[in-house]
Image: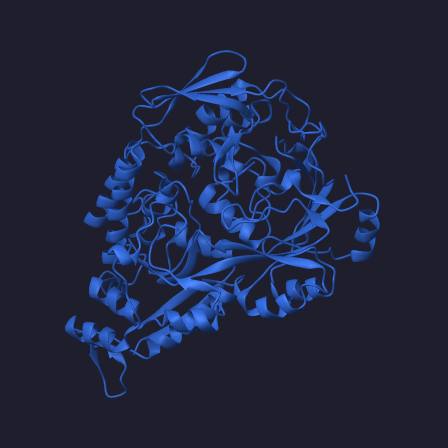
Length: 590
Protein backbone atom coordinates (compact mmCIF):
# COMPACT_ATOMS: atom_id res chain seq x y z
CA UNK A 1 0.00 0.00 0.00
CA UNK A 2 1.44 3.32 -1.02
CA UNK A 3 0.08 5.18 1.86
CA UNK A 4 -1.87 4.63 5.11
CA UNK A 5 -3.91 7.70 6.05
CA UNK A 6 -1.80 10.17 4.24
CA UNK A 7 -1.61 12.73 7.39
CA UNK A 8 -1.09 9.78 9.88
CA UNK A 9 1.17 7.29 7.75
CA UNK A 10 4.00 9.74 7.13
CA UNK A 11 4.19 10.46 10.83
CA UNK A 12 4.68 6.64 11.29
CA UNK A 13 7.23 6.18 8.51
CA UNK A 14 9.27 9.08 9.87
CA UNK A 15 9.62 7.09 13.13
CA UNK A 16 10.81 3.87 11.48
CA UNK A 17 14.46 2.78 11.63
CA UNK A 18 16.06 -0.59 11.24
CA UNK A 19 17.17 -2.26 14.47
CA UNK A 20 18.41 -5.64 15.61
CA UNK A 21 16.31 -7.71 17.95
CA UNK A 22 16.60 -8.20 21.68
CA UNK A 23 18.21 -11.56 20.87
CA UNK A 24 20.62 -10.53 18.09
CA UNK A 25 22.52 -13.81 17.91
CA UNK A 26 19.45 -15.95 17.21
CA UNK A 27 18.01 -13.45 14.73
CA UNK A 28 21.34 -13.01 12.96
CA UNK A 29 21.56 -16.76 12.60
CA UNK A 30 18.11 -16.81 11.05
CA UNK A 31 19.07 -13.97 8.71
CA UNK A 32 21.75 -16.22 7.17
CA UNK A 33 18.96 -18.47 5.92
CA UNK A 34 16.30 -15.89 5.09
CA UNK A 35 16.34 -12.21 4.19
CA UNK A 36 15.15 -10.23 7.17
CA UNK A 37 14.74 -6.53 7.82
CA UNK A 38 14.37 -5.21 11.35
CA UNK A 39 12.61 -1.90 11.97
CA UNK A 40 11.89 0.05 15.13
CA UNK A 41 8.91 1.97 16.43
CA UNK A 42 8.70 3.98 19.68
CA UNK A 43 5.27 2.63 20.53
CA UNK A 44 3.14 -0.50 20.40
CA UNK A 45 0.44 -0.58 17.73
CA UNK A 46 -2.83 0.66 19.20
CA UNK A 47 -4.95 -1.76 17.17
CA UNK A 48 -4.86 -4.08 14.18
CA UNK A 49 -8.20 -2.68 13.00
CA UNK A 50 -7.28 -0.33 10.17
CA UNK A 51 -10.55 1.59 10.17
CA UNK A 52 -10.45 2.29 13.92
CA UNK A 53 -6.79 3.31 14.12
CA UNK A 54 -5.81 6.88 15.06
CA UNK A 55 -2.15 6.25 15.88
CA UNK A 56 0.79 6.67 13.47
CA UNK A 57 2.36 3.55 14.96
CA UNK A 58 0.74 0.75 12.99
CA UNK A 59 1.64 -2.11 10.66
CA UNK A 60 -0.95 -1.15 8.04
CA UNK A 61 1.42 0.03 5.25
CA UNK A 62 2.83 -3.51 5.22
CA UNK A 63 -0.43 -5.46 5.19
CA UNK A 64 -2.88 -3.37 3.17
CA UNK A 65 -3.24 -1.58 -0.14
CA UNK A 66 -5.83 0.67 -1.74
CA UNK A 67 -7.21 0.80 -5.26
CA UNK A 68 -4.31 2.97 -6.44
CA UNK A 69 -0.97 3.97 -4.93
CA UNK A 70 1.17 7.09 -4.91
CA UNK A 71 4.77 7.00 -6.11
CA UNK A 72 6.89 8.29 -3.22
CA UNK A 73 9.40 9.96 -5.55
CA UNK A 74 7.17 11.49 -8.25
CA UNK A 75 3.87 11.66 -6.29
CA UNK A 76 2.13 10.35 -9.42
CA UNK A 77 -0.74 7.92 -8.98
CA UNK A 78 -0.10 4.37 -10.14
CA UNK A 79 -2.22 1.19 -10.34
CA UNK A 80 -2.46 -0.99 -7.23
CA UNK A 81 -5.41 -3.30 -6.57
CA UNK A 82 -7.08 -1.55 -9.50
CA UNK A 83 -5.20 -2.03 -12.76
CA UNK A 84 -6.91 1.02 -14.33
CA UNK A 85 -9.52 3.72 -13.84
CA UNK A 86 -11.56 6.14 -15.95
CA UNK A 87 -13.10 9.52 -15.08
CA UNK A 88 -16.23 10.86 -16.76
CA UNK A 89 -16.23 14.23 -18.53
CA UNK A 90 -18.30 15.85 -15.80
CA UNK A 91 -15.79 14.58 -13.17
CA UNK A 92 -18.61 12.98 -11.18
CA UNK A 93 -18.06 9.29 -12.00
CA UNK A 94 -14.88 7.28 -11.48
CA UNK A 95 -14.77 3.65 -12.56
CA UNK A 96 -12.07 1.29 -11.24
CA UNK A 97 -11.19 -2.04 -12.83
CA UNK A 98 -9.64 -4.53 -10.39
CA UNK A 99 -6.78 -6.80 -11.36
CA UNK A 100 -7.75 -10.30 -12.34
CA UNK A 101 -7.09 -13.03 -9.75
CA UNK A 102 -6.52 -10.87 -6.65
CA UNK A 103 -6.43 -12.78 -3.36
CA UNK A 104 -6.40 -12.08 0.34
CA UNK A 105 -3.56 -13.33 2.52
CA UNK A 106 -5.69 -16.37 3.46
CA UNK A 107 -6.03 -17.30 -0.22
CA UNK A 108 -9.66 -16.18 -0.60
CA UNK A 109 -10.58 -14.14 -3.73
CA UNK A 110 -10.52 -10.34 -3.45
CA UNK A 111 -13.40 -8.95 -5.53
CA UNK A 112 -15.51 -5.89 -6.20
CA UNK A 113 -17.72 -7.06 -3.32
CA UNK A 114 -14.84 -6.31 -0.94
CA UNK A 115 -14.58 -2.78 -2.34
CA UNK A 116 -18.33 -2.26 -1.92
CA UNK A 117 -18.20 -3.64 1.63
CA UNK A 118 -15.20 -1.54 2.64
CA UNK A 119 -16.68 1.76 1.53
CA UNK A 120 -20.41 1.26 2.16
CA UNK A 121 -20.34 -0.86 5.31
CA UNK A 122 -17.26 0.55 7.03
CA UNK A 123 -16.03 3.96 5.85
CA UNK A 124 -19.52 5.34 5.18
CA UNK A 125 -21.26 3.51 8.01
CA UNK A 126 -22.81 6.07 10.39
CA UNK A 127 -22.37 3.66 13.30
CA UNK A 128 -18.61 3.36 12.78
CA UNK A 129 -16.67 6.46 13.93
CA UNK A 130 -13.71 6.10 11.57
CA UNK A 131 -11.62 9.13 10.72
CA UNK A 132 -11.53 7.95 7.10
CA UNK A 133 -15.04 9.32 6.73
CA UNK A 134 -13.37 12.75 6.60
CA UNK A 135 -11.61 11.73 3.40
CA UNK A 136 -14.90 10.94 1.68
CA UNK A 137 -17.03 13.83 2.95
CA UNK A 138 -17.80 16.18 0.06
CA UNK A 139 -18.40 19.74 1.18
CA UNK A 140 -19.20 20.64 4.78
CA UNK A 141 -22.33 18.52 5.02
CA UNK A 142 -22.55 14.77 5.40
CA UNK A 143 -22.61 14.13 1.64
CA UNK A 144 -20.60 11.19 0.35
CA UNK A 145 -19.95 9.21 -2.85
CA UNK A 146 -22.22 6.32 -3.81
CA UNK A 147 -21.01 3.01 -5.27
CA UNK A 148 -22.35 0.68 -7.95
CA UNK A 149 -21.05 -2.74 -8.92
CA UNK A 150 -20.80 -2.92 -12.71
CA UNK A 151 -19.50 -6.48 -12.97
CA UNK A 152 -17.08 -8.88 -11.29
CA UNK A 153 -14.10 -6.54 -11.68
CA UNK A 154 -15.52 -3.04 -12.13
CA UNK A 155 -16.94 -0.66 -9.53
CA UNK A 156 -18.26 2.85 -10.18
CA UNK A 157 -18.14 5.73 -7.69
CA UNK A 158 -20.63 8.54 -8.26
CA UNK A 159 -19.93 11.93 -6.67
CA UNK A 160 -22.65 14.52 -5.99
CA UNK A 161 -20.29 17.17 -7.37
CA UNK A 162 -16.73 17.24 -8.72
CA UNK A 163 -14.30 16.34 -5.93
CA UNK A 164 -10.74 16.63 -7.18
CA UNK A 165 -9.01 14.88 -4.22
CA UNK A 166 -11.10 11.70 -4.45
CA UNK A 167 -8.81 9.74 -6.76
CA UNK A 168 -5.77 10.44 -4.61
CA UNK A 169 -7.70 9.45 -1.49
CA UNK A 170 -8.31 6.04 -3.04
CA UNK A 171 -4.57 5.47 -2.56
CA UNK A 172 -4.97 6.11 1.15
CA UNK A 173 -8.06 4.04 1.88
CA UNK A 174 -7.27 0.35 2.28
CA UNK A 175 -9.62 -2.33 1.01
CA UNK A 176 -10.74 -4.68 3.82
CA UNK A 177 -11.95 -8.32 3.66
CA UNK A 178 -15.73 -8.72 3.61
CA UNK A 179 -15.61 -12.48 4.17
CA UNK A 180 -13.91 -11.98 7.56
CA UNK A 181 -15.33 -8.70 8.84
CA UNK A 182 -18.92 -8.55 7.56
CA UNK A 183 -20.34 -10.46 10.54
CA UNK A 184 -18.75 -8.05 13.05
CA UNK A 185 -20.24 -5.08 11.18
CA UNK A 186 -23.74 -6.56 11.16
CA UNK A 187 -23.65 -7.78 14.80
CA UNK A 188 -24.05 -5.48 17.79
CA UNK A 189 -22.49 -5.62 21.23
CA UNK A 190 -24.34 -5.16 24.54
CA UNK A 191 -24.33 -1.38 24.06
CA UNK A 192 -25.87 -1.57 20.61
CA UNK A 193 -22.63 -0.73 18.81
CA UNK A 194 -21.29 -2.80 15.91
CA UNK A 195 -18.92 -5.49 17.18
CA UNK A 196 -16.56 -4.25 14.49
CA UNK A 197 -15.52 -1.41 16.81
CA UNK A 198 -13.72 -3.89 19.07
CA UNK A 199 -12.72 -6.38 16.37
CA UNK A 200 -9.07 -7.05 15.57
CA UNK A 201 -7.59 -5.54 18.70
CA UNK A 202 -3.93 -6.20 19.46
CA UNK A 203 -4.93 -9.31 21.43
CA UNK A 204 -6.27 -10.96 18.25
CA UNK A 205 -4.42 -14.05 17.01
CA UNK A 206 -2.17 -12.91 14.12
CA UNK A 207 -3.50 -15.53 11.71
CA UNK A 208 -6.94 -13.93 12.05
CA UNK A 209 -5.71 -10.60 10.64
CA UNK A 210 -6.27 -10.87 6.89
CA UNK A 211 -4.68 -8.39 4.48
CA UNK A 212 -3.83 -7.77 0.84
CA UNK A 213 -0.43 -6.09 1.10
CA UNK A 214 3.08 -7.49 0.66
CA UNK A 215 3.27 -8.82 4.24
CA UNK A 216 1.07 -10.45 6.87
CA UNK A 217 1.42 -10.55 10.65
CA UNK A 218 3.20 -13.63 12.00
CA UNK A 219 3.38 -12.72 15.68
CA UNK A 220 3.06 -9.87 18.14
CA UNK A 221 4.71 -9.64 21.56
CA UNK A 222 3.52 -6.52 23.42
CA UNK A 223 6.24 -4.01 24.26
CA UNK A 224 8.74 -6.12 22.30
CA UNK A 225 8.08 -6.68 18.59
CA UNK A 226 5.79 -7.42 15.67
CA UNK A 227 7.06 -9.96 13.15
CA UNK A 228 5.72 -9.93 9.59
CA UNK A 229 6.30 -12.46 6.82
CA UNK A 230 5.81 -12.39 3.06
CA UNK A 231 2.23 -12.66 1.89
CA UNK A 232 2.33 -15.61 -0.57
CA UNK A 233 -0.80 -14.30 -2.32
CA UNK A 234 0.47 -10.74 -2.90
CA UNK A 235 -0.39 -9.73 -6.47
CA UNK A 236 2.76 -7.93 -7.58
CA UNK A 237 5.70 -9.30 -9.61
CA UNK A 238 8.82 -7.60 -10.95
CA UNK A 239 9.65 -7.22 -14.65
CA UNK A 240 11.30 -10.66 -14.65
CA UNK A 241 8.18 -12.31 -13.26
CA UNK A 242 9.60 -12.75 -9.73
CA UNK A 243 6.97 -12.47 -7.01
CA UNK A 244 7.36 -9.56 -4.62
CA UNK A 245 8.30 -8.64 -1.95
CA UNK A 246 11.96 -9.65 -2.15
CA UNK A 247 12.58 -9.58 1.60
CA UNK A 248 11.20 -12.62 3.45
CA UNK A 249 10.38 -11.09 6.83
CA UNK A 250 10.28 -7.84 8.78
CA UNK A 251 10.79 -7.50 12.52
CA UNK A 252 9.18 -4.36 13.90
CA UNK A 253 10.97 -3.82 17.19
CA UNK A 254 9.19 -1.74 19.86
CA UNK A 255 11.64 0.51 21.73
CA UNK A 256 10.36 3.74 23.35
CA UNK A 257 13.72 5.53 23.60
CA UNK A 258 15.49 6.77 20.50
CA UNK A 259 18.83 7.09 22.33
CA UNK A 260 19.62 3.40 21.85
CA UNK A 261 18.99 3.57 18.12
CA UNK A 262 22.12 5.58 17.41
CA UNK A 263 24.28 3.32 19.59
CA UNK A 264 23.02 0.18 17.86
CA UNK A 265 23.54 1.69 14.42
CA UNK A 266 27.11 2.79 15.11
CA UNK A 267 27.99 -0.64 16.49
CA UNK A 268 26.99 -2.17 13.15
CA UNK A 269 23.84 -3.93 14.36
CA UNK A 270 21.37 -1.81 12.40
CA UNK A 271 20.62 -1.47 8.70
CA UNK A 272 19.06 1.97 8.80
CA UNK A 273 18.48 4.90 11.10
CA UNK A 274 16.27 7.97 11.15
CA UNK A 275 19.04 10.58 11.46
CA UNK A 276 18.38 13.24 14.06
CA UNK A 277 20.01 16.67 13.52
CA UNK A 278 22.26 16.36 16.57
CA UNK A 279 23.72 13.10 15.22
CA UNK A 280 24.14 14.12 11.59
CA UNK A 281 27.75 15.39 11.75
CA UNK A 282 28.94 12.33 13.65
CA UNK A 283 27.23 9.89 11.30
CA UNK A 284 28.44 11.72 8.22
CA UNK A 285 32.06 11.35 9.33
CA UNK A 286 31.60 7.60 9.80
CA UNK A 287 29.63 7.05 6.59
CA UNK A 288 32.37 5.27 4.60
CA UNK A 289 33.72 3.18 7.48
CA UNK A 290 30.24 2.17 8.58
CA UNK A 291 29.29 1.10 5.03
CA UNK A 292 26.13 3.12 4.88
CA UNK A 293 24.76 6.11 2.98
CA UNK A 294 22.86 9.05 4.44
CA UNK A 295 20.01 9.82 2.06
CA UNK A 296 18.68 13.39 1.90
CA UNK A 297 14.92 13.36 1.33
CA UNK A 298 14.54 17.15 1.30
CA UNK A 299 12.51 19.30 3.66
CA UNK A 300 9.81 17.38 5.48
CA UNK A 301 6.33 17.85 4.08
CA UNK A 302 4.49 18.47 7.33
CA UNK A 303 4.40 21.23 9.91
CA UNK A 304 6.11 21.66 13.28
CA UNK A 305 4.13 24.06 15.42
CA UNK A 306 2.97 25.36 18.77
CA UNK A 307 -0.74 25.80 19.40
CA UNK A 308 -3.17 26.69 22.17
CA UNK A 309 -6.41 24.97 23.06
CA UNK A 310 -8.96 27.46 21.72
CA UNK A 311 -11.94 25.29 22.66
CA UNK A 312 -14.47 27.25 24.72
CA UNK A 313 -16.81 24.28 25.17
CA UNK A 314 -17.50 22.04 28.16
CA UNK A 315 -17.80 18.30 28.59
CA UNK A 316 -21.13 16.55 29.11
CA UNK A 317 -20.92 17.31 32.86
CA UNK A 318 -20.60 21.03 32.15
CA UNK A 319 -16.91 21.36 33.05
CA UNK A 320 -14.94 23.61 30.64
CA UNK A 321 -12.12 21.85 28.82
CA UNK A 322 -9.87 24.86 29.45
CA UNK A 323 -9.78 27.04 32.55
CA UNK A 324 -11.90 30.09 31.68
CA UNK A 325 -9.19 32.58 32.60
CA UNK A 326 -6.60 30.85 30.44
CA UNK A 327 -9.12 30.35 27.65
CA UNK A 328 -9.54 34.12 27.58
CA UNK A 329 -5.81 34.56 27.01
CA UNK A 330 -5.57 31.87 24.35
CA UNK A 331 -8.53 33.24 22.39
CA UNK A 332 -7.07 36.73 22.38
CA UNK A 333 -5.49 37.21 18.93
CA UNK A 334 -3.03 39.81 20.23
CA UNK A 335 -1.86 37.34 22.88
CA UNK A 336 -1.18 34.74 20.17
CA UNK A 337 0.64 37.33 18.07
CA UNK A 338 2.86 38.18 21.03
CA UNK A 339 3.74 34.50 21.51
CA UNK A 340 4.65 34.25 17.83
CA UNK A 341 7.03 37.20 18.10
CA UNK A 342 8.54 35.85 21.35
CA UNK A 343 9.84 32.56 19.92
CA UNK A 344 13.40 32.65 18.58
CA UNK A 345 13.05 30.21 15.70
CA UNK A 346 16.45 31.05 14.23
CA UNK A 347 18.09 29.92 17.50
CA UNK A 348 15.95 26.80 17.34
CA UNK A 349 17.13 26.09 13.79
CA UNK A 350 20.79 26.62 14.73
CA UNK A 351 20.92 24.86 18.10
CA UNK A 352 18.33 22.11 17.88
CA UNK A 353 18.34 21.33 14.17
CA UNK A 354 22.03 22.14 13.61
CA UNK A 355 21.08 24.39 10.71
CA UNK A 356 19.58 21.42 8.86
CA UNK A 357 16.22 22.94 8.06
CA UNK A 358 14.38 26.17 7.30
CA UNK A 359 12.10 28.48 9.24
CA UNK A 360 8.52 27.51 8.52
CA UNK A 361 5.77 29.97 7.67
CA UNK A 362 2.97 28.10 5.91
CA UNK A 363 0.65 25.15 6.59
CA UNK A 364 1.37 23.86 3.07
CA UNK A 365 4.67 22.17 2.20
CA UNK A 366 7.21 24.16 0.20
CA UNK A 367 7.29 21.33 -2.37
CA UNK A 368 3.63 21.91 -3.17
CA UNK A 369 2.64 24.02 -6.19
CA UNK A 370 0.07 25.65 -3.88
CA UNK A 371 2.67 26.91 -1.39
CA UNK A 372 2.43 30.66 -0.70
CA UNK A 373 5.84 32.19 -0.06
CA UNK A 374 6.54 35.18 2.22
CA UNK A 375 8.18 36.76 -0.82
CA UNK A 376 4.75 37.09 -2.43
CA UNK A 377 2.96 38.40 0.61
CA UNK A 378 2.49 35.72 3.26
CA UNK A 379 2.61 37.36 6.71
CA UNK A 380 5.50 36.24 8.92
CA UNK A 381 6.52 36.78 12.55
CA UNK A 382 10.23 37.40 13.02
CA UNK A 383 11.73 37.16 16.49
CA UNK A 384 11.05 40.39 18.37
CA UNK A 385 10.53 40.04 22.15
CA UNK A 386 10.15 43.79 22.61
CA UNK A 387 7.34 43.81 20.08
CA UNK A 388 5.78 40.91 21.98
CA UNK A 389 5.82 42.86 25.26
CA UNK A 390 4.35 45.95 23.59
CA UNK A 391 1.48 43.94 22.17
CA UNK A 392 0.74 42.35 25.55
CA UNK A 393 0.64 45.68 27.35
CA UNK A 394 -1.54 47.13 24.61
CA UNK A 395 -3.94 44.20 25.09
CA UNK A 396 -4.32 44.98 28.82
CA UNK A 397 -1.66 42.70 30.30
CA UNK A 398 0.80 44.18 32.82
CA UNK A 399 4.14 43.44 34.47
CA UNK A 400 4.80 43.37 38.23
CA UNK A 401 8.04 44.40 39.91
CA UNK A 402 9.58 40.97 39.16
CA UNK A 403 8.72 41.42 35.46
CA UNK A 404 6.18 38.62 35.67
CA UNK A 405 3.29 38.93 33.23
CA UNK A 406 -0.16 39.42 34.74
CA UNK A 407 -3.50 39.78 33.03
CA UNK A 408 -5.78 42.77 33.61
CA UNK A 409 -7.25 41.08 36.69
CA UNK A 410 -3.86 40.39 38.25
CA UNK A 411 -3.66 36.69 37.40
CA UNK A 412 -0.18 35.36 36.70
CA UNK A 413 0.09 34.21 33.08
CA UNK A 414 1.09 30.58 33.44
CA UNK A 415 0.20 27.46 31.46
CA UNK A 416 1.44 23.95 30.66
CA UNK A 417 3.11 22.92 27.39
CA UNK A 418 2.30 19.36 26.31
CA UNK A 419 4.86 17.43 24.22
CA UNK A 420 5.32 13.79 23.31
CA UNK A 421 8.11 11.94 25.08
CA UNK A 422 9.39 9.93 22.09
CA UNK A 423 10.86 12.88 20.16
CA UNK A 424 13.95 14.48 21.71
CA UNK A 425 14.09 17.28 19.13
CA UNK A 426 10.51 18.23 19.91
CA UNK A 427 11.22 18.18 23.65
CA UNK A 428 14.23 20.41 23.06
CA UNK A 429 12.03 22.80 21.08
CA UNK A 430 9.51 22.88 23.94
CA UNK A 431 12.31 23.64 26.43
CA UNK A 432 13.51 26.54 24.28
CA UNK A 433 9.97 27.87 23.94
CA UNK A 434 9.72 27.71 27.73
CA UNK A 435 12.91 29.81 27.95
CA UNK A 436 11.75 32.28 25.29
CA UNK A 437 8.41 32.81 27.03
CA UNK A 438 10.17 33.42 30.33
CA UNK A 439 11.88 36.38 28.67
CA UNK A 440 8.49 38.05 28.27
CA UNK A 441 7.34 37.16 31.78
CA UNK A 442 5.33 34.00 31.08
CA UNK A 443 5.72 30.86 33.22
CA UNK A 444 5.39 27.73 31.06
CA UNK A 445 5.59 24.26 32.60
CA UNK A 446 6.38 21.15 30.54
CA UNK A 447 4.37 17.92 30.45
CA UNK A 448 5.91 15.03 28.48
CA UNK A 449 3.71 12.02 27.75
CA UNK A 450 3.75 9.08 25.34
CA UNK A 451 2.28 9.97 21.97
CA UNK A 452 -0.71 7.68 22.27
CA UNK A 453 -1.59 9.43 25.56
CA UNK A 454 -1.03 12.81 23.92
CA UNK A 455 -3.50 11.89 21.18
CA UNK A 456 -6.10 10.99 23.79
CA UNK A 457 -5.70 14.36 25.50
CA UNK A 458 -5.79 16.29 22.23
CA UNK A 459 -8.65 14.55 20.46
CA UNK A 460 -10.77 12.83 23.11
CA UNK A 461 -10.39 14.37 26.57
CA UNK A 462 -9.44 17.83 25.23
CA UNK A 463 -7.86 18.61 28.62
CA UNK A 464 -4.71 20.41 27.51
CA UNK A 465 -3.56 24.03 27.30
CA UNK A 466 -0.60 24.37 24.93
CA UNK A 467 0.96 21.80 22.63
CA UNK A 468 4.22 21.54 20.70
CA UNK A 469 3.53 19.10 17.92
CA UNK A 470 3.74 18.14 14.28
CA UNK A 471 1.34 17.15 11.53
CA UNK A 472 2.29 15.59 8.22
CA UNK A 473 0.62 16.84 5.06
CA UNK A 474 0.45 15.88 1.42
CA UNK A 475 2.69 17.56 -1.13
CA UNK A 476 0.41 17.44 -4.15
CA UNK A 477 -3.12 17.65 -2.75
CA UNK A 478 -3.78 20.35 -0.11
CA UNK A 479 -7.10 18.77 0.81
CA UNK A 480 -5.13 16.12 2.71
CA UNK A 481 -4.66 18.63 5.52
CA UNK A 482 -8.43 19.21 5.80
CA UNK A 483 -8.39 16.64 8.62
CA UNK A 484 -6.44 19.22 10.60
CA UNK A 485 -7.90 22.49 9.35
CA UNK A 486 -11.58 21.79 8.71
CA UNK A 487 -13.65 22.68 11.78
CA UNK A 488 -15.20 19.20 11.71
CA UNK A 489 -11.92 17.44 10.94
CA UNK A 490 -10.82 14.48 13.06
CA UNK A 491 -7.48 16.20 13.86
CA UNK A 492 -8.77 19.77 14.32
CA UNK A 493 -7.04 19.71 17.66
CA UNK A 494 -6.95 23.42 18.50
CA UNK A 495 -10.77 23.59 18.56
CA UNK A 496 -11.95 19.99 18.48
CA UNK A 497 -15.72 19.65 18.27
CA UNK A 498 -17.79 16.59 19.05
CA UNK A 499 -16.81 13.57 16.98
CA UNK A 500 -19.59 11.36 18.30
CA UNK A 501 -23.28 11.97 19.04
CA UNK A 502 -22.90 9.58 21.97
CA UNK A 503 -20.20 11.78 23.51
CA UNK A 504 -21.59 15.30 23.05
CA UNK A 505 -19.85 18.42 24.21
CA UNK A 506 -21.62 21.59 25.29
CA UNK A 507 -21.18 25.05 23.80
CA UNK A 508 -18.77 24.26 20.98
CA UNK A 509 -18.77 26.50 17.93
CA UNK A 510 -16.48 27.32 15.05
CA UNK A 511 -15.19 30.87 14.68
CA UNK A 512 -15.91 32.96 11.59
CA UNK A 513 -12.40 32.43 10.25
CA UNK A 514 -12.66 28.65 10.79
CA UNK A 515 -15.89 28.69 8.80
CA UNK A 516 -14.14 30.61 6.03
CA UNK A 517 -11.38 27.99 5.93
CA UNK A 518 -14.11 25.34 5.67
CA UNK A 519 -15.57 27.20 2.69
CA UNK A 520 -12.20 27.55 0.99
CA UNK A 521 -11.43 23.84 1.32
CA UNK A 522 -14.83 23.02 -0.09
CA UNK A 523 -14.24 25.39 -2.99
CA UNK A 524 -10.72 24.06 -3.58
CA UNK A 525 -11.89 20.44 -3.63
CA UNK A 526 -14.56 21.28 -6.21
CA UNK A 527 -12.25 23.29 -8.48
CA UNK A 528 -10.23 21.54 -11.19
CA UNK A 529 -8.44 24.58 -12.63
CA UNK A 530 -4.94 24.63 -11.09
CA UNK A 531 -4.49 28.42 -11.18
CA UNK A 532 -7.80 28.94 -9.40
CA UNK A 533 -6.95 26.27 -6.83
CA UNK A 534 -3.64 28.02 -6.12
CA UNK A 535 -5.52 31.26 -5.45
CA UNK A 536 -7.99 29.49 -3.15
CA UNK A 537 -5.32 27.78 -1.06
CA UNK A 538 -3.33 31.02 -1.00
CA UNK A 539 -6.26 32.68 0.81
CA UNK A 540 -6.29 29.79 3.27
CA UNK A 541 -2.62 30.28 4.07
CA UNK A 542 -3.16 34.01 4.62
CA UNK A 543 -5.98 33.34 7.10
CA UNK A 544 -3.76 31.00 9.10
CA UNK A 545 -1.00 33.62 9.14
CA UNK A 546 -3.41 36.33 10.29
CA UNK A 547 -5.40 34.37 12.88
CA UNK A 548 -2.55 32.21 14.25
CA UNK A 549 -4.47 29.15 15.43
CA UNK A 550 -1.02 27.58 15.26
CA UNK A 551 2.35 29.17 14.67
CA UNK A 552 5.06 27.33 12.86
CA UNK A 553 8.58 26.56 14.03
CA UNK A 554 11.35 24.93 11.96
CA UNK A 555 10.94 22.55 9.05
CA UNK A 556 13.85 20.05 9.26
CA UNK A 557 15.46 18.14 6.42
CA UNK A 558 14.58 14.46 6.31
CA UNK A 559 17.66 12.22 6.53
CA UNK A 560 17.85 8.43 6.55
CA UNK A 561 21.02 6.38 7.03
CA UNK A 562 20.80 3.05 5.21
CA UNK A 563 23.40 0.26 5.10
CA UNK A 564 24.79 -0.29 1.64
CA UNK A 565 23.58 -3.90 1.70
CA UNK A 566 19.99 -2.64 1.32
CA UNK A 567 19.23 -2.18 -2.37
CA UNK A 568 16.52 -0.39 -4.36
CA UNK A 569 16.35 2.43 -1.80
CA UNK A 570 14.23 5.32 -3.06
CA UNK A 571 14.03 7.64 -0.10
CA UNK A 572 12.14 10.92 -0.06
CA UNK A 573 10.45 13.15 2.47
CA UNK A 574 7.22 12.49 0.60
CA UNK A 575 7.22 8.70 0.71
CA UNK A 576 9.79 7.95 3.39
CA UNK A 577 11.96 4.85 3.15
CA UNK A 578 9.28 2.20 2.93
CA UNK A 579 6.85 3.43 0.29
CA UNK A 580 8.38 0.79 -2.04
CA UNK A 581 8.88 -1.82 0.68
CA UNK A 582 8.03 -4.65 -1.74
CA UNK A 583 10.97 -3.62 -3.97
CA UNK A 584 13.65 -3.40 -1.26
CA UNK A 585 16.26 -6.14 -1.55
CA UNK A 586 19.21 -7.27 0.58
CA UNK A 587 22.53 -8.02 -1.14
CA UNK A 588 22.96 -11.71 -1.71
CA UNK A 589 19.23 -12.40 -1.23
CA UNK A 590 16.59 -12.76 -3.91
